[in-house]
Length: 104
Image (cartoon, rainbow, N blue to C red; front, side):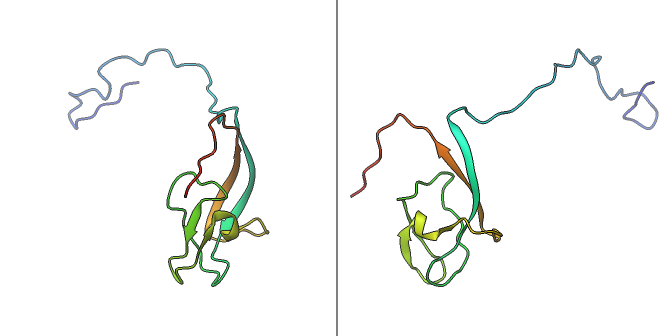
């Protein structure tokens, strides 16, 4: 069976034959990362949902509410109560050999 790109059949869809397909693959997170829970980020003062500004945050990192401008640690904004609401985040435990970051 041949598939053609053009109406008149002059251009084949694939110039080269299909090669051997690789075996089954599996994508796994790094072995030093574990998913702990799914939570919600919401302001503890006004309950507005908060989007995380970066890909990874630590519980002690500072976060601000876009609605009431309340500022606190990420752990104060995080709720693990079910059901999680629209501002869902994955809470992961990451094993790190780096020294902790100290901010002044």
